[in-house]
Length: 391
Image (cartoon, rainbow, N blue to C red; front, top):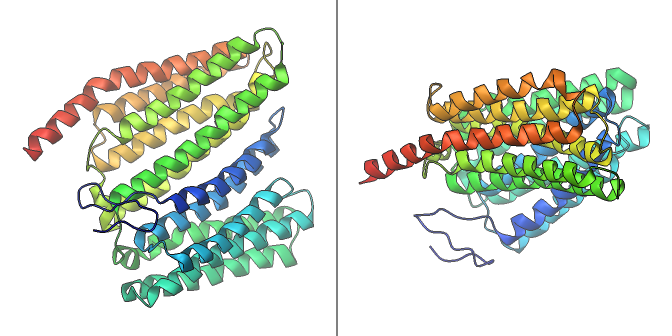
């Protein structure tokens, strides 16, 4: 196949790669993820953590819609770039208003309007592509009907309700949107998908969220300045971040071609996509709390901070194990190792509020390192079996 406008060649062997324009779009989501994780603040509380988690879901879903749409049909020409840019401008609005949601109707209005406009951008992209890719029409029709129904809930909650009732209505709207691909399995399966490109895109978004962890603890070091133990706590935070990266990508890359099933758009694609919501949400909450933990070097974690950091690592391990189990087997060695590591992480939770921050972060980093090391032989055996099968 010939190269696209950005020079990224598409080959039968490697599949197509993310374009430079897709990477530009990711920068907008970087800003939005940062604004949401910053809601956790200097001393995370239950309200701030719940708000950050709730706001992360529509942002994550918006990114998924744009990423999957590009995976299905993306000519990467001027028209598509202009339509996508308009949608990304709405995502910027989500970033601007995310910090104020729940603190005033103005921010609520801005966030919902931005979200619905961002969703409209995806619809416009599908509509533009349908003239060339007629097989996308059933998918577009389902998407438009589902989006219109959920938009009524978003707007109804905004205009007619206030307080908890408003946010409960929005939760129902969000749940309906997430359920739509599951209800439209036939239409989803009828669209083409590039498995390697999809895996690359989810890996890149994982990097984005991990980047917030790095930003969090570096900001914490700046805030701590010369506080005793700040460097030690910062080093532990960096080791934890590196361990999370290694854990995710060691499993993700252990089986070349192992995600080929994503191309069918069936059950495994749903497991892969929705399985990444808890993975990336866990990383976001962990990153938001780590910054506050480093800034308070020498102190102890609060119960909420400990829940974000320790619980976030455990949720990350369980979620990646579930995704792997769906593609391989529940008894796969790496799956078992990750579930055991998650249980071990949770055992640290009662101690997290009494031990120094650096000790908690270093213990979690060591646990991840041990998990990755023990998984090594299983990954190598899987690679060897794949190579023998190919031969």
